[in-house]
Image: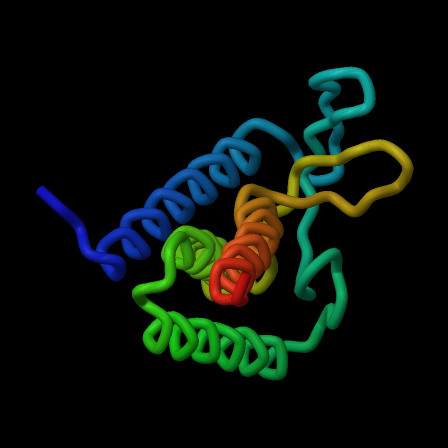
Amino acid sequence: MRLGAWGRVALVAAGVVALDQATKALVRRTVDQGDRVAVFPGVEIVHTRNSGVAFGALAGGGAFVTVVIALALAGLLAYFATHVRRPLVWLPTGMLLGGAIGNVIDRARDGAVTDFVALPLGFPPFNVADMSITFGVVILLYALEQHDEAARPA
């Protein structure tokens, strides 16, 4: 079976949502809120709740946060729809969409997002959806740069 670009986006997004929701459920079941469990030197699992967006920004934003997320997703999908043939753009689109949906599910269900990966030096805790969004942005920038490089005359 050969998937088109939209099918690949959906497959990546579904995979991200599934992994994100499974890891958050595991943390909610096994780690009390506020507790920390050492995993590797400097890396801990900590059960925290985040009512804002990236790294707690806009905490308590409620409807405003929802509108910002919806507008960002609409812009992403509109961009993808008009650049569907660009190589690799389906991958970060799926990663960004899946990450956003994973966190939106938490907001709708609990009013806040479950974050659980804590790194040293006071870096705010994050989750699989956040990782997917971060790497999705990096890969999207790479894909756009590669396309721009290929389009430049020699």
